[in-house]
Image (cartoon, rainbow, N blue to C red; front, top):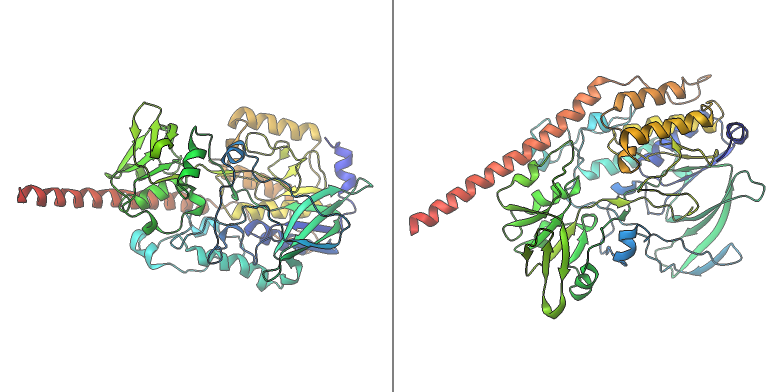
Length: 497
């Protein structure tokens, strides 16, 4: 754990910053750092072919993999890759699966309102898809994924930041420089038409981690699942790889999960898969949405899976209440993602969060490293802007953090209030408190340098809550339409009899 004095000393001479990732958090971090006017070098390393992060669709023909279900369940699947000796050098293309694909499917829309989501100085375009208007009305607050990806990329383009970004480049390792200050990054660039990667190193005074935490799917340990997946390839998947409802038409499907993607996929497949669709829930639903998606008349809820049987040609899912479902075609897990830092395995990850991260930004053990985006249940993307501005000002030496003892007290008090797992990182329901704490700590721009943060606007929260009610109304309408359709069909059958 770095002392308070070390924290101050290490930020005094920061002139070069590496940003890991160019999704929404990385894109707004570029602007925040540039506007401080304090750095000689800013470099962004993005492993995909363009900015966008988890909003960038996969290229045609991309295949998602679940290479080792045991490691996925243990949250250890994204392992470090050893660099070749004597860098820089060319080496055969890395064969390690890196989970770099995204969860974008053709119909995907945002699930929070654009007004609450957008950065304070850059509006999300008023583009509404036909699908969204049909379901939510002409004033639908949601935006199609293509609009969002273009919005992220436009942040880079409109300000001429393209030259700062190195795409198709993975940060494979970060290490402390020998002198103890600054970092050495080991980098690997992929080339689409070559069978070799280029490896090299670069040194920086500080590192800003904006690599996100929606990359490596999490699927809990389930007895017999590995054997089932092996016996019937394609039968086990994560919602990250969901693309087209037609792929499930007439199939016997089990969905698992009731947070964000679980309800979305269940509601989407209820009228497509064999009826009923079987949904595994634990009786705990997302606080925003409740269980409305699962009230569809063609969804049957089940307790957790006990085990899966695949020997002697069976395809049976057995639930914890002893009931079983034979002839299962697909099991789709909407069970979240695992935090991973393959490039810095020394950073501890506990209960799927990074401990010792003051204000969800500052590692108490690493004074010249900052995080942007290490939160859940917040105003994505807006909260990234607040974090990026504070992080940039801190690296520029214009912000002084409280003593280490106070930082540790902040974490302990939050653990007592929220728990020592993912809920620790959830800003809900105290959005305004967090935004204002960040804004006040960041302070105003100095000498015209720096990005300005406005006070928290209660209208953002109103738009945020109203959008959730629209999603609930959508599911209510779908449920009612399905009930009416089934009544008509049953009436037709009865009249024929």
